[in-house]
Each structure stands twice: as C-alpha cells, then as structure tokens.
Length: 120
Ligand SMILES: [Cu+2]
Image (cartoon, rainbow, N blue to C red):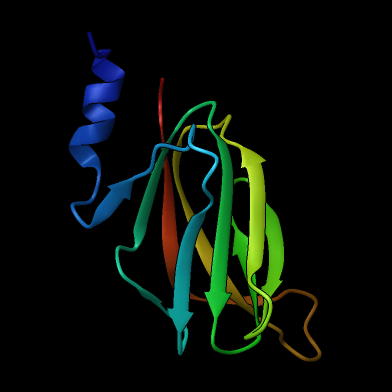
C-alpha cells in the first residue's frame, strides 16, 4: 500500500521520465549533445538506492547536481560520474555551470535533467 505522500508525489511527476531500478548494479547512463540531454529529461530512482549516474557529453562542461550538491566535469572522452546514496527525496535539477569571469558566483544554464527520488 502506497502512502498518501508517495501518491501525491507521483501525481506531480512529469510524464517524460523513466524510473530506474537502481538496485541493479548497472549505472544509469545519459548523454548530452550540444548542452541538451538525449532522451527523457527526468530520471527517477527510489529513496535508499545507490545511484551511479554517468553523463556523457560531446563538449567539456561542468555539471552541478543541486540538492545533493555534487559537481563534476564531463568531457568528450570522460563522462561525469555522480555516485551517491539517494537519501533525500524530491526533485533536483542538474545544471551546467557557466563560469563568470570577474564575478564571485557562477551562473547556470537551463536544467540539463531532473533527478526525482521517490519516497520508499
Ligand atoms: Cu549549480
């Protein structure tokens, strides 16, 4: 029986996502071409999953998984690898970081993908 919170959460999930069974020892692999994700933009996993997300890119970019606050670089010959335990539930964006010369902070391109962690 699903909790009400889980039902509400699923009810707001976007339709273009894919739920991955992260218990499988297979990493989730996605590909970015010219700054845009190929395929479904929402990746769904379950709370408690050990997630390995490999992001290939056709150009060198810095990627930031917000919420989990993991930053990794991807290059054409070197996918970015995000490995973490999905403890926090919710919807988290992964964005490309664009360095701003002369500014303290960085800016973000539109989200490359969304990670949704569904409650157990
Ligand atoms: Cu960021």
